[in-house]
Amino acid sequence: MISQYSILGATDGLTFEAYISQKLVPNLWKGAYVIMDNCSIHKSGEIEKLIEAAGAKLIYLPPYSPDFSPIENCWSKIKNILRSIGARSYPDLAKAIETAFSQVSLNEIHNWFTHSCYCTSLD
Image (cartoon, rainbow, N blue to C red; front, side):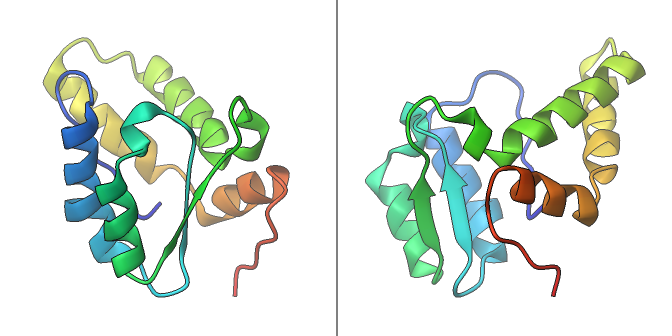
């Protein structure tokens, strides 16, 4: 995982753009790829500029193609962990989210990308 960002409430275009500029872009490197689905908040021209200015490339998945999205597997794991923790307050949920993301391993990420038909290397 490169970064995560938790907020209270729904995510809109401005919130997503803030995540991209403040959390994701500082952790990108030249030649990195950022893969996004076709959610409307992902389509801002400013987001593409921020990612490309970092030397990374933005790839949009075809519509309705969750099989090509490794994040779907990650969300499945995160949600299972959150259900098992059973947090009932916002502070407990925030702590549970941190716990859940800390349990995502590099090997799992590699396997999710492989499962989604991306060539991957751990080197």
